Image (cartoon, rainbow, N blue to C red; front, top):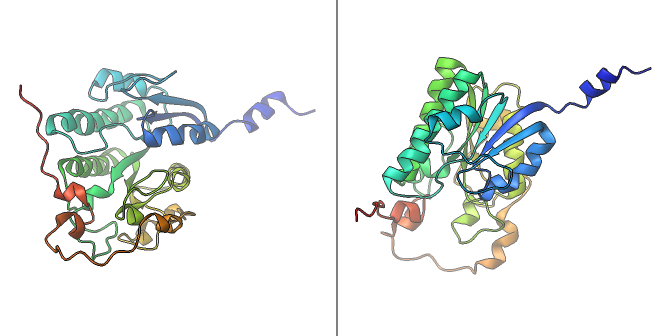
Length: 275
């Protein structure tokens, strides 16, 4: 007769408890179902209202500390994902990620999947192909905060042994919205697979990987992150019919066309209204 306890043990999922921050966002909504197949408990959190989720301000250290209790690994999508006034970015993207890692040390969390951004290298020209060792050239204050997150995660790996995979996510939507996104497109399916590889690879150390699908035009090279086993299945090629072929634009001074960050590189820094 099979031991009942053995049956229970064999049915256990790879993780007991996963934490997903930013669960109400575009990518958080896509990921929640997949995480449920990988963990007995998925703890979801967002500052925005979300049914059955913890509403936690990442800038609140005590709230973040409570979120991490009993957590095995973290998928950190929380924070501001567009350019914004620096004071707002400071709380959500800098203080928030510090609070997360400080709590991870306290609670013994050993794996973080961190949503970085391709905007950390957005001032590289579109005529170049960058890999994970390319110099950081953020195209916005938002990009600067993601550089901070990558550097902080590196420190916490070297100092405390917390492994992190930094996902330099491109443009993850149902479909590309413009010509630039034909290059930076990351399908939802490929995004979920990228997170799966980041969680399940046995040892990652401190890794950086570009989150893009297998698009015809490439600005990034993931060769040095191939140990993660991420093999995108989708491509923006299926959407080529949405954008008619046009002759090259003669405006060679257009920053949005010259640099990989596109409109992020061209926009003036945002300031909070002092009124």
